[in-house]
Length: 255
Image (cartoon, rainbow, N blue to C red; front, side, top):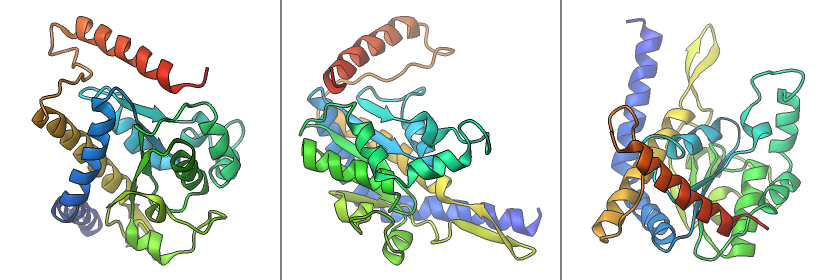
């Protein structure tokens, strides 16, 4: 195998193993908070911008996704692959770095103290994400779970006007352990091979699985999106999922 590719694969495997080894307690604490929200019929909001929207989609909606997670994915913050022109990078970059946009997003949602928010941001200081976390906590009094690279978040100046990073706001912070620069491989003195998506998606799955185990240990039934190709009862189960989501959204969208 090419040395560079092998090196990246080894770094990715080591990162996953390190998250599992070092973040058990934080993942358990975070999952307990999420389970509290879901168990009482409230929501575990999910937010991320740019590539940090990918772990949001990894949690919900998808096969095996737990009902109770409520993704907040803004099209201009998650679709920028046109690069130029309509929904291009320049517009994305402006909105991601604009705290006002975060406040505008939250105006569409009704936040309760029983809700929680899982916020994904590699840098820990993405202005739109930090703003949403700040307002979520101030206005709804809900708990915050931050998923970030603490090395990056603590080692760089926050881009948010408050000077705070997600780790300063969170009730629980899960450290992805991703290198400060994210990229991890050098080819012709050009840095490649980012690891932040691997780290964030690993945490996303561990949070989802641990939340399910926590709910089960409490004797609480929960719904998941069925796998249609393998579950003959999937149409009925999906109808139950959609009914539950209509109620969830009705309670958490500003009327």
